[in-house]
Length: 405
Image (tube, rainbow, N blue to C red; front, side):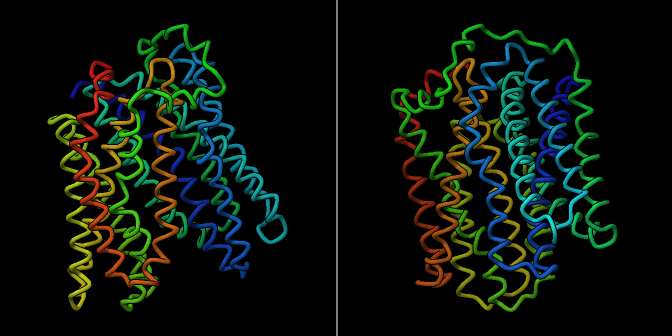
């Protein structure tokens, strides 16, 4: 691997870590801290509002694209939004959860808005600086950054909180965000790339035009369904382990540490595989893996649930999810219109987030009604449905217009 290519990957990994570790902390660790401080479940539920900017970020993605005429300007957006993110995190450190809860929630929403803006600019920057053959490994960095961020943000930071306390942890988190921005700050100037002037005509409603492309329906269906055979299992695996008799400490290690680590480790092999065989062949492989994972969990319900099978299942589950993420990110990078990179990539990822949210919400009701075995059986069926739809979707000449992108 050339030094220049490795530098791109390292820079992207640092950018995705910069946004994912604090985000994981606020969305997973803060609820734990709040419960330890005897907050009501209703108050903890309100905390989920901080995630709204990541669902709505497609609304201001056209503004980011419109105001960037070079990769250097995307870098400015990245540095400005993430520095603001760090400042807000630092500010939250001065507040007390017990006396300033509402203010902290507002500041978290502001912080997540800055982080979502950083993500828009980072994705567009990645699309522009990565060559076609580099994108699969580039997206391995994105997926790895997300998984490592989850591992650090939901595990290591909780331990640090125990020893250092709220304020020191928040100050350290803000400092970390600024430190991991160093690679993008010194990214070689020769990588600067002037972009076409047509982006000055980008409409504030540009995301609407993405959906008006001819024959895009199959692609949207693929995005909406791609994770569907895994998400319900991912959502219910911790409650499933609780019902099997595992305690919180065991579940935290099995799923939170071991499972997430397996996911992070499998991102690189997934990127290498996609790079070697191409998207047209890889699109068959990852859904097949997802079906096998669903079948494994369905079969697990007929066993005595020995510990080694639990570990194998969790490893397969998180690995499959990580590999699917690399594929989806790589495909989404390909299906972007010139000059609308940030907007189009953001829209596609939001679609996967929305479908995952819908399935996650429904999974609990389904499991309550027809048991875990029934839920896992449905996941097998959904996985097979995706697999059967692939030939019809990829025969759609919608993808032909992006062959040389």
